[in-house]
Amino acid sequence: MPVNVPVGNKKTEVVALGGNALARAGEPASISNQFRHTRESLSPIVELARAGWRIALVHGNGPQIGDELVRNETAVGLVEPLPLGVLVAGTAGWIGYMIQQSLQNALHAAGIDRPVVTLITQTEVDPADPQLHIPVKRAGHPLDADAAHRLEARGVPVKQDADGKHWHRLTVSPVPIGVAEAPLVERLVGEGVIVIAAGGGGPPVYREPAGRLEGVDGVVDKDRVSAVLARDLGAEVLIILADVDAVYRAWGTPTAAPIRTMTLAEADALLASGTLEKGSIAPKVEAGAAFVRAGGARAVIARGSDGQAALEGRTGATIVRV
Image 1: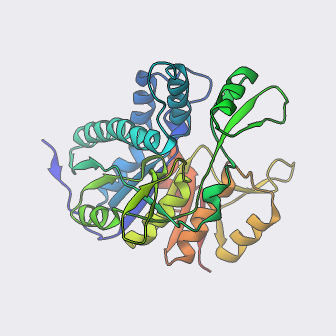
Image 2 (image 1 turned 90 degrees about the vertical axis):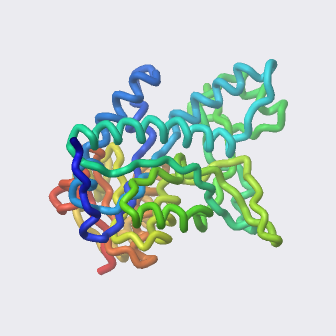
Image 3 (image 1 turned 60 degrees about the vertical axis):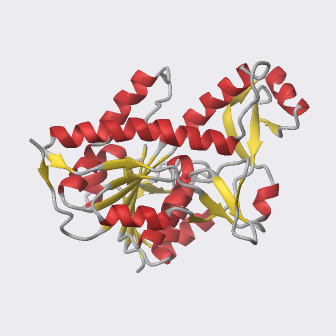
């Protein structure tokens, strides 16, 4: 019989889990495979729950959105395609369901009585953000010439890849400024509920002058949103779990070396150097630095299986103020 674990240390942690952790490259992204990987990725969360942390969990959805866009395009002659913001909300629901059920089972097996819930949250962006009008973010799987031309004919922006053989759909990706349901997340987390929120970054919305929310056909970066949510929850720690064991200095060279701890100034200098991969580790360092700059105690970037060890400073990369 599971025993109730008190939320004893009164500290809040936001955990960001990459969508690639659930759908691995090189294998079919079947639901059974994704459930299996979800179960494999949750041991750090179980240990945090056992230790009494208040937890909000954010997940990515890159591979899953790619599959949803394929379904969209395959059925375009039968049903109206859904906009990206709606697809983000949809993936937040079914990926959240996978994580919620898997985590409930893992907690039960560990004898831990902590409730888990998935919330579909909306990510607020600035209506004056110029990124609302500049489609630069790649979305979905690579396209052949025919698929790219069909999208262009419907007014969807595409761009040819450097290889000259494939194209990608482009979409807008404005900067997140808040999570509309953050007060509700904070209340639930404070009661010991493990909350899965801002799934896939959450569907982006902007607030009209009268206060009405309006959806955006685009996406927001999951790591950036996790930093914003952690800031608004007053979290002590943001941990970004990815497929890297650390942040590396001189990555891709014979002198590459892991950076275990860096100050804000060092993180800023590393980002300014342009040596971090823009679509991979750079957004994670940016998000971690933004959270610490906003008042967080520390941000940790680590491999998914190393969450607890990274929290203890034994692996991963930790960003601190000074």
